[in-house]
Length: 612
Image 1 (cartoon, helix red, strand yellow):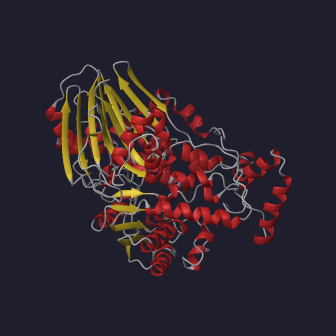
Image 2 (cartoon, helix red, strand yellow):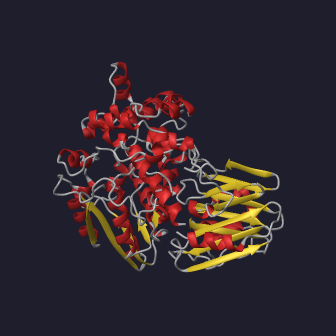
Image 3 (spheres, one colour):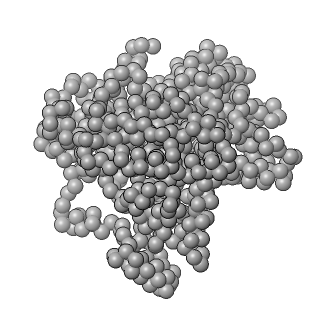
């Protein structure tokens, strides 16, 4: 994805050209195709271009229609033709070759902020009104493209890379202790507006930032609608509509030429690969699709590799395998080639870094199957309650009865009954116990006991029959997942794309009655009948076959003890207590390694400071 960064001054200060050059240098890894630096009174921008397609991209940024409002950012739009036709009803004719950036500028000129909800796709961008001296920063709903900002006096800095903002001398590198506390409690920070640095914030998905001499404000501009179920006469009508949306989502994400797909032996990524190959062939699109798979054989009886191979063979695409067991915990974490802008608790991160490095030798766009495990796994219990409250007893009998007759069991309820029963019986899951190794001073200073309870309180269920899926999609969960696959975290110019998170698919699925089509991906299974091998199409959803960490510890390949020197982490963690917890609780070893992940990250940024 292309890189961008900039700053504006409410007071109209002259931009610092040397600062812009340093920021552009920090973005070089994102855009090998072009670099631009632009400066006017009160504003300075820099941009590095990564050409990906398929839609035309602006070769120079910032770009403008009228010399007044300028756009700087990373934009990939879906539904271009629909947007273009809607704009043409109010505007002059727009060429089919118009860039995505031009369409955004036209939508802004036509509708202003209300027009943002019409923009489908993956984007983060800034709009600078040079006459009114106002800045807007915008990020898409899913949060597929990062956007960070910081305010210092009369200046507002923004970028899709943290390190570019850190070039500004007035932006400190002091840690955000709330972020650190959440990371130690959870392994990530659920507060999507925070970063690991006190002075830098993240713009959450579906939010807009406005900055001017009046100040800075951030607000939400879009939420997924909550609609009644879509009642169709025949189940195959849902399948056909889903197929249409799926093919459209994949087609609009396909580059013209080399592309990669992260392929497992599951249903989601294999379906994306199959639709990509057939769509490209049907539409005469040049596509060189190659699959990349992690295989954990022979250490585990891992089905992913063999099933991925079967799927790739059926689809007719080559597949490259990488061993998932050849890496020990924290391999390469002391290597400067393992970029990590913020703490990340993924002890086998090097496996993905090696894989994405191989991908970068072939393509600039990588597809994946993210999103399939949300709505399409369904929750029968909330749907049952919804039907009863809606006095649709006939639908209850028909949907649940037919499911029972076909499968010999009731649909998976997924109402949280097992965890409730465990609480009633006083049983504790060690994974969810509050860490005992937090420093007493840090825990009290940040009130982490209350924070722990807050993070475990039941959240309000907004959607009547897809509460968990809706919360994940509308609440920013995917932004945190996708940020770790951004180029800033990999160091290579490869753009990740997620067809199953297309908003048109998401909004359709949120209206599909959960039983039977959104129980265990029944809708997807029907769509790919005859396209994928039956072993893949009918494969039940299962957790990973083995515990690599436990195996490596048990066989002596890796030892978590003795612990390294704690360094800065001693301010947050009781190191002696951590050692005792690791020694006595094998079942919670993964969560007890969070302080080690934090230590590696802190050592990394300390070394980075020394190199500057």
